[in-house]
Picture 1 (cartoon, rainbow, N blue to C red):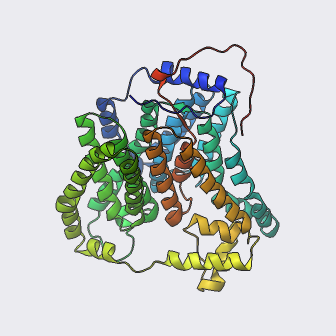
Picture 2 (cartoon, rainbow, N blue to C red):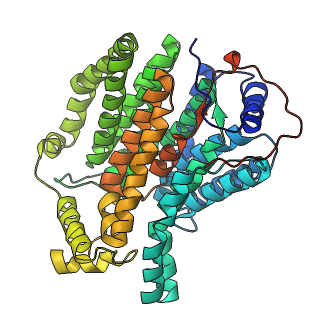
Picture 3 (cartoon, rainbow, N blue to C red):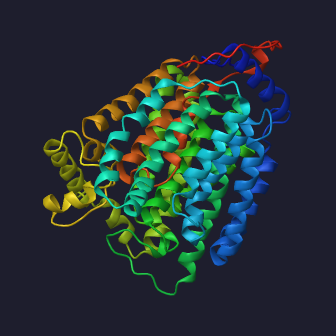
Length: 474
């Protein structure tokens, strides 16, 4: 069994988290029966929430309340991570059903739950890079506050800064969490469970409509009546997570079959939205993971490739032809279309704004300025060029900090498991931010997870420490 790196937590914090992981959360591993039962329960749950949003509101409020309850308990950090992970997966389901009282509620509530857990823990470290990342984005916020009416400024900042804010908090939180392989598996499965509901809602919505018109554009009808880009991206995340667990975790034959079927379901519903970004993100992330394994551990890569190739053969020989026939050939035409999208025009407009205003146009103000270059106002779909247009050289610095975070967290890994896990998360998050900005909380959450400390408790001797002194590492 592999020995996992403990990271750079202070000794007292590392000891405390190991006690938490070994004695509280690792008493029993994830079983196939547990995952299968929970997955089946989320099939009708999604349809019920979609048909009766009040049920979804109760689901949301109870989950938030339980998250804060666990955050305020002692030694519950991993459990808090699992609850927030579930919120991340359920965010798009609530949006599809029109449940959320406030559009960015998922990001802010998740962040506040994590902050509550950190405050309750008392002894914690604050990594410097995430704080710097958020700090360099503040000057452009001041421009917005000065040039916009208070109400408009509040809405603009909430929409555009909730993602970076949550990324910072998520990074600080996971820098103080020590996880075993089992704990990481719980978090990934927690994200995956509500995505079963999303997949079933899109399937239910598609078959319940008498007639669907398929064109060369993203399809709202097969996306549950909600934004195809966001739905496709999260279903693609489901594909990626199922394949990631399949590749880097050891599991039973039954569990492997379940993960293959899960990946096929998520992939089918993702492509049916006619939004290509979701499946491209998943393919890019899992390809990067496999490539790293080929370099680091070829035998593991080969074992992981076998079920993935099998899933690919099943999809393209059995499932994709049926879907294409259902759409009257429009599905093949959609994915064969290699012409550029409007996103490329927005990217060019952002670069021109950056050159004209090197110190930044201000948060949200680029939306109006793009009219000078495009002839119409447009929302940015690429987080990196949005940072350049709205934050100027500070946005460029923010991008450099994100790159530094990725490099630092990858270099401190001491196992192939940790490297493969982080590469997949970083690539998926980057691809998401390239085509969907930070509209959802998922990329910020996964980016923050790269700060987690991965250990194998069986290789660590846990000693109680009396009166630990506070240390603040940056």
